[in-house]
Length: 481
Image (cartoon, rainbow, N blue to C red; front, top):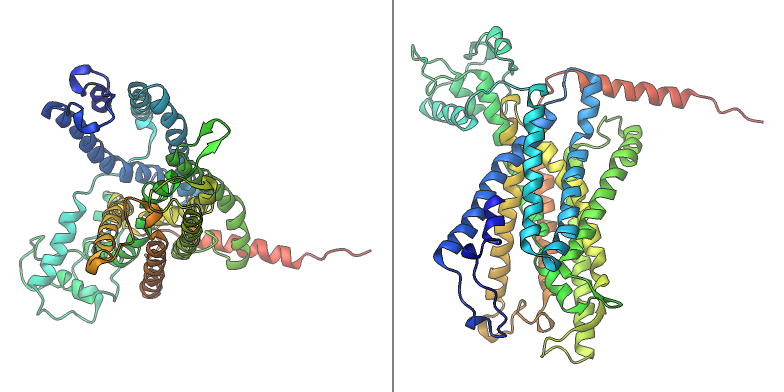
C-alpha cells in the first residue's frame, strides 16, 4: 500500500494529467511508472495471500476446543470474523470511493495505508497474549511423503489389524501439542504408507498413521472445494457485469448521480444484516429443531447459499430482459444510450448476493478450517481463498468463451460493448444452469463426505445441553385459567 500511495502521489512515479478528449493523445506511463504500479499490486496480492488464511486461523485458534464454553463461542467466530471484514469493505466501497473520486488518489490510498500500519502495531502489541500453536513443518511436504510412500509400496498388502500399521507413541504427539488420529477405512490405498515392509524408516518410505489420516482429510475436502468454484464466479459478477448494467441506467437522485460501483455497498449491508440475523435468530431456531449446536451443518449452510445463487441469476436474467425491452421501446438499442429506468431495479440481485455470502462464504471458510487437521489449519483456510481466486479466473474464461462462441457463424453475440444490443439475459440464464448443475454435483459429493472426528467432546456436551433445554421446555405445563 505504501508503494501504491507513492505511485499516485509523486510526479516522477505517475504520468502527467491529461485533459484530451482522445485518450490516445495522452502521454503514456513510463516503464518505471508501470513497474512501480504493477509491482505494488502484485506485492499486495502476495501479502494478501499470506495474511488472509493465517489471520482467520490464528483468530479461531484462540478458542480452546476442550472447553465447552469456548467451543460455543468458536461456533460464532467466523460469523463475526466475516462481519468485521465486511465492515471494512463497506468503508472502502463508500467513504474511500468518495474520497478517491472527489478528493484524490493520494488520500484515497493513504488512509488504508495508515490503517494497515496501525493494525500491524496492534497485532505486535497483542502477540505476547495470543495462544500460539507450535509450527509442525510444511503440510505439503508431509502430504507428499505419504503419497510417495504409498506409491512406492503399491503392491504391499494392508494388514487386517490396524495395530500393525506404523505409528508414533502417544507421548510423541502430546509432547509437541499434537493430536493422534486413529486409522480410517476410507482411501485405503494411502494406508500403504504406514505398512512396514522392511528395516527402512525413511520418512519417504514409512509414514505414521496420523500423517496418513491428515493427508486423507485434506484430500477429502478437494471435491467440496471444486464445488465452490462456480459459486465463486457469481461473486465476480458484482464488480463486472452488474456494474456495466448500472452504467446504462438512470443513476440520478435529484442532482446527485450514484456511481454504479457503489451498488456493491448494498451487497455489504445485506451481508452484515444477514450475518446478525443468522447468528442471533436463525441458529437459535434451528438448534431447537435439529439439536445441532451449529443450528445446521456447515455443508447445509453452503447448500443454501448455492440455492440463493441460482435464484439471483434467474432474477438478474428477468431484470435484464425487462431492461432490454425498455431500451427497445425508447429506441436506444443501436446507439447504446441511457435506458430510462432507475438503477435501483438492480437492487434485488445485489441484496440477495449479500444474503448468499452470509450463508456460503462464511460457511466455506469455517468448513475448510474446521475440517482441516489440527496441524494444517492454515492450509485448510487457504482452500477458501483458492476458491475465490479460481472463481475469478473461471468467470473470465466463461465470459470470453461465451462471447466468442455466440459470435460465430455471423451471429450478433450475447456480450457486446453495447449492452443494449447484447443478451446478458441469456448469459445469466446460462450461469443459473451452471449453478444448478453444480448444486447437483455438490449434493453428490456431500453425500459421500465423511466429517473429521472431533478432537474433544465439547460438541457432544453442547448437543446434550440443547437436548436437556428442549426437554425442560417441552415438559413445562402452561397454566390455564
